Amino acid sequence: MFDFDLDKMLFSIPVDKHSPEDVRKVLEAHPEVKFVSLVGIDIGGHDTDEKIPVKVFLNDMEAIMSHGVQTDGSSAILPKIAELNDARVDIIPDPDYCWFVDHNLKNLDYETKLPVGTLRIPSALVHNKTEYVGARMVLKKSIKSFKKDLLQTMKEHPYVFDNLGLDSVDEIDTVDLTSATELEFWVKTPDEEVSSEMLSTAQTLKEQYWKRTIGAVRSSLEEALIMLDHYGFHIEMGHKEVGGVKAHLEKTGHYDHVMEQLEIDWKFTNSIQAADNENQVKYVVRDVFRMHGLDVTYRAKPIEGVAGSGEHTHLGVAVTLKNGKHVNLFSPKDLTQDYLSPIGFGAIMGLLNNYEIINPFVSSTNDAFNRLKPGYEAPVSAVTSLGISKTSPSRNRTVLAGVVRDVNNPMATRFELRSPNAHSDTYLVLAASYMAMMDGIDAALSNEKTSADLERSISKHVGEEDFYLDTNRAYRSEKNVFTEYDAAERDRLFGRAPRTVYENLCAFDDFPKKTEILKRDGVLDDLILESYRIATLNKWQTDLLERIMPNTRKLIRKTVKVHKDNDCVDYDVTYWSKIDKIRKQLGQDTLEEQCLLTRISIALHTGEFEKASQLQIEMQEMIEDLQDLYSVYVRNIF
Image (cartoon, rainbow, N blue to C red; front, side):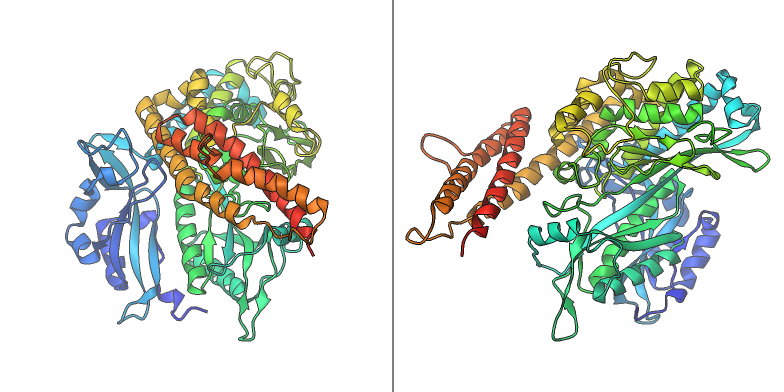
């Protein structure tokens, strides 16, 4: 357990304690909190972490809270916005959301014997004193736009209130957008390597799923859950996920060769707070596990051939009435008669119909695309499942957007977007999702469609025309999307999914009308979209050049001939010939021909991104063939 008293530590300062007097009182009562950090989120999802000594902050609190601090914006990821010749960015504190304390678990304060803490205050990034920029500010603008447009649309089409059990928009006090994420991650002993075959076998046999944790993993998970609960995150559970292998008990009594996948879930809250909470949860989990000598990775697909790590994102819309009652706008008046209200149907239709321009924010890394493959409980097609019947909620884990509902609990109705991962920028994913959902709601209500009408729309077949949805697409399936359709059928029914980061970003150009949805009310303008595109392309390019291609060369060098020419069979010779041919095509130049890795490198350095993207797909297919052939080859060697 911890070597310090959690009950004596400061974990957060809630919204109602943000007055200068209250903040001063709290910080003076907790001398272990030595620093204050104004946390802005740039367009790449990275947060700032400047350290202001608490004494400096308290002496100038009013000015800092009003005007923030100035920083060199060229150090943040804000391409086309904060350039070297126009780099001023101010970080302005946001008093409207909870402030968390980040604890350095390896640095105890001498006097209090508690970890040194940094008060992290979520903040806005402001370029040249006027332009609010960064991912967090995009989400704030999208929420404002959604609430305004929703109330106006409901007011103009009051027929919708019949299905909600309300009389009019005048009953509504506030619109409440709620969200939650689920954090999956891999944990391992440093520098440990476990064969993908062992991991794949364990996954197939379901040897790890929900299994009892042991050793340092158990201690780390328990301590992380206890600490997270002190933050007020209302932790619901932590458990083992599908991936992993059994750790080895060493003679010292410690477990080694740890390679396990875990998940932590916590309660929903308003959307901005949910994204803020997720950031803090990741820091706490990583810090606690490191205290036990374990590495944590939030990569979407850290190990090929086994399950990746998702971060299912839940989306809900409710209202608080003037009488204090809460009403879920996705739930119909009678859950046994309709799956969703017209607003709920409109929202899920908007999400699916516009997913092309949401996906660039969801799948923005190479790992994200490596995860989205059939058979690994990760969605490959933009489709939903409503359920077999009104009284049998869907638990189809193969769809992109699941409809979560409980006939006995109208407040439980929400959508589960299953494609994000821990490296998806939750602020931007939520922002784009809300803009897309509002587009569908506006279409449904403007055409005064009933729940029955909209159920028929979302259940339509390919070739059927609809007032909103694409004629050449289907949007609902109650089948296993991975096994009931082959790749060609999935593409025909639900549209072809992008295969690389570059292809994904092309959606902003390929679907201009849908991209305009993101720009409504200035939520995402051309400059921000271009900034995001450049930042994401740079990350894609760097990851290919600095990680994926060097790792591919290592793989080629490890894929060596193991049979002896004087002691082998024709089977060995034939397989090695196929393997060696792929090795050379992938990584060995000749005077006459450049290998695939060289051609990718040249394409990236010369800005031929479309060519590099196509070659990347070819590289991935060759690597899979190489690994499959080599696995068969080595099994035949005595």
